[in-house]
Image (tube, rainbow over the protein chains, first blue to last red):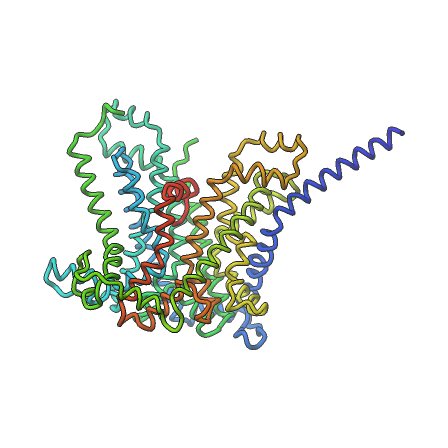
Amino acid sequence: MTIAATTAEVKGTAWMRGFRRNLAGYLFLLPWLVGFLGLTLGPALGSLYLSFTDFDLLRDPRWAGAANYVRIFTADPKFAESMHVTFVYVVLSVPLKLTFALMVALLLNRGMAGLSLYRAMFYLPSLLGASVAIAVLWRQLFAGNGLVNQVILMVFGIQGPSWISNPDYALYTLVILSIWQFGSPMIIFLAGLRQIPQDMYEAASIDGASKWRKFYKITLPMLTPVIFFNAVVQTIEAFKAFTPAFIISEGTGGPIDSTLFYTLYLYQEAFGYFRMGYAAALAWVLVAIVALFTAFSFLTSRYWVHYDE
Amino acid sequence: MTSNRPSVAKPLAAHIALMLASLVMLYPLLWMLASSFKPEDEIFSSASLWPSHFNLDSYIRGWKGLEVSFGRFFWNSLVISVLSVIGNVFACSLAAFAFARLKFRGQKFWFALMLGTLMLPHHVTLIPQYILFLNLDWVDTFLPLVVPKFLASDAFFIFLLVQFFRGLPRELDEAAMMDGCSPWRIYWKVILPLAMPALATAAIFTFIWTWDDFFAPLVYLNDMGSYTVQLGLRSFVDSTGKSDWGGLFAMSTVALIPILIFFLLFQRLLIEGVATTGMKR
């Protein structure tokens, strides 16, 4: 056997080994790859195309240029209304929910007895909250003769209005429902609080720092990465909220569009009126809003998020 | 730590505040449970947690359902959820193994794309997916709800498992490789058995999220015979919601039972799952 032949053989087996390694990798990845190409990338490109067409499922899509987008931003009062409703919901529910989550986490973090019991009780609404059953319950709680009004009548002797059928209040009942589910950000805050080294507090105590000062100078800055994370995740979730508004308004977004969440409007356009092209454009506007918001958060984060390194 | 322990009064005040808060939070749930055992006229006249006449009429009425029995909805939800758990855990663990334990060309590229899909609102793929499933004649079957799970469509779980797989010691694979184990055997015999806690977390959350899912069944299931529990509840609201609160509460309670069972059995695992992966709910 010549030397040349041997190196060729070695090269051959090295190539074979590389091939087999790649093959194994792609075989394991195969289900995800098929899903990614067939159910995510392909459909995403498809909906981008559809967003420039008129399409009602019956006839072939007809090219419409930017007409859908022009209509969204200039001639669609329902879009404006749903945007308004969604922004009010996001701006109210996310900060309130996170404030609650942080307050309870701080209370629980002081080495309380029964910590795991409290934690579990506060987490339960988060776990159940997305259920239709909970939306049904909420509808009843805030109905004219619901539990909330029964309590108001008992305590104050006043007959409250029907909160869910009043356009001035309906959205706020959904905000309360969202705050009620503060459990999962609370757990994430608790995990974050555990990461703060105790010796920082001890050093501050020796220097005679007050409790409030310790919170302001140690806890809060050390927790900013977790606050940032929770804020981004919860905001994206709030933009996508659907089920409670659908159940409480029986799919209408009423009364008078006061609970017309963006996703609910999108659903109506797609599966109520079968304006698939228009709904696809609405979906891409949602993506753009979420992307803009996320980019904005990451850009501003370096001014207030404290990374320890 | 013990030196700056607060006085006795402070934890007491904190306990009272926490207990009041949990009572306020859980009261609606307990009240719903109580109302499901109350006669209809008592639901709106009493905020009490104890029914004056304890009866099961609401359950019997509710279970009969509309044209289709609630038992059917329950069965449908169960089938969809169990299949989803199997598909999701299997497909996501395969992908996670490839990302976390193997080396191949293009790995980083695909991993970055996978992470990208985590942020993508599903509304963007909704309409073409619907058209695809419509053309495959899958609308009004469980396939549009289950098949994507076998294709690891929820990247969050891949991410969760990648994190866990990466934490397992590398020497395990190397030793197994020396012994001539194929990647498949390493995945099946070494990694999966060690990853049981992560797989269980993924399985439980998949079950709960599928059980709770409202949007996908709303889009894909139109025939009442194939309704899930969530859709059944919804049509209950629309048709009898104003007249039969008892039945509605009884079936709402029934709809929450599977989640409550998981919560009671596995709450530690669930809470750890949220704490370590930053889950949204």
